Every structure is written in C-alpha cells, then in structure tokens.
Length: 125
Image (cartoon, rainbow, N blue to C red; front, top):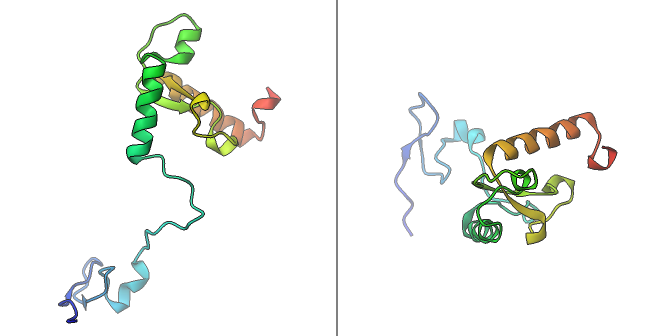
C-alpha cells in the first residue's frame, strides 16, 4: 500500500512536510491534539438523540417556559433545561427536563454557578 504524499505542516510559518494524519511535522508533533473520547467520557448533549429528547420535551410542555408559567406568565420556551443539573446528579430522564426561555435559563444557570462557587448546594437554601 503506497504512503500518502507529503503535505505542508499545519504549524504557522513552518516549511516542514509531513505524512502524519494529524498534519504536523516531527518538530511540531506535540501540537497535535487527539479528539478521541475516552470510554468514560460523559455522554454528549448534542446530535440526533438530544434533538429528539428536546423536541419531545418542548411538545410536552406546549412550548411554554415552565418557570414563567409557575409565575403566571406565558413565555415561549426556546431551550430545554435539566431541573437538577448533571453535575449535581441529575439525569436526562423526561421528569428531570423542562422547557425554558432564555432569560430564565440564564438566571438559573448563574444561580447554580454561584451555589457551586460558594460551596452551598440546593439543600442548603
């Protein structure tokens, strides 16, 4: 099987040639990043499976932001959010997901971030 023809190194201002798949010459091989996920990596939240879940939750919640609805406001939801975030032990099950508008999602995410920084969890409030 013939080897591939040499091509220019991907490092800026390098005139070297390479046949490596990562595209860097031997001098710059340390700049190559491997993108393979380890088997223990968390499940990706993108792609078709997530789009199907998102569509199902938006339909279930009739396209309305659930936190706004609890306050008597009718606001269109544009996102799907984990009620208990993944970092705190939440799951992707339907009962842990809600339709939410961007302002509510931003506020909820900031509050979760502040609780994480302060060391106090939701049980401390």
